[in-house]
Picture 1 (tube, rainbow, N blue to C red):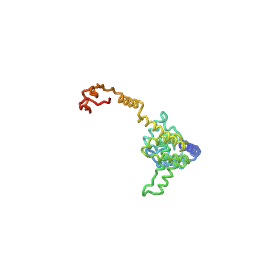
Picture 2 (cartoon, helix red, strand yellow; picture 1 turned 30 degrees about the vertical axis):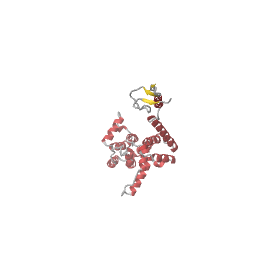
Picture 3 (cartoon, rainbow, N blue to C red; picture 1 turned 180 degrees about the vertical axis):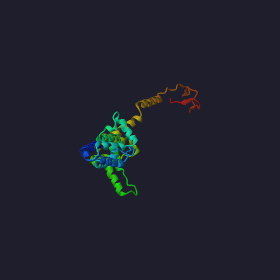
Picture 4 (cartoon, one colour; picture 1 turned 135 degrees about the vertical axis):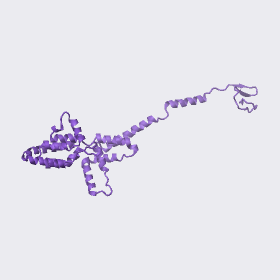
Length: 279
């Protein structure tokens, strides 16, 4: 993570400066300063759902630890951070470091471990969407709203988007209907996995998805098959190839149908079972 590397690099620079200055501070003053900072440090309680990360905690308390706490020894500042952890966060860190102990870490190593373990579970794409969805609540202080927007832009790195990135982001945010659920999932996956993707690339992916979807629909709901057409043809043949009813020519010049079930009446003799025939 880029943010973690920057934080650790900064911490190591302060660690080097601290080593040079710690010897200049009298012991009683060091203890007093450490106790003062300990009381002012806020407690850290990790919550991934509300994005309460260690990085945010560190950013908020950085001045106390690295400016006011500059005369303190590296180990003392590391210990101050560990003491600020709630019980469950300290237990999780301890379990991860086994068989080592958190107390064996330097100041920079402590920051790196805590930043990595208690980081945001949100993707950069998700944070950017949330930034674009920030709304000013009725009655809320306009200044606080502005600061919230600035902080969200910085955290999501929205200000680092290129024009091509912005095109893709706007394209995806417009896929909101229920029918676009699968399409939106495909587009988001492409954005997350391929940061250099362009809008034409996304459009091609979406068109390919639609093409495959139509193919699937054809398989699920096919047109009349060859088998059905064959059955239809066979039915037609049986209709026109029925065996002829045997007829017996009578001396009266008409035919007598060889069945007793006929209900037809002969126009010639008015009897059932006879039909008039041509000579």
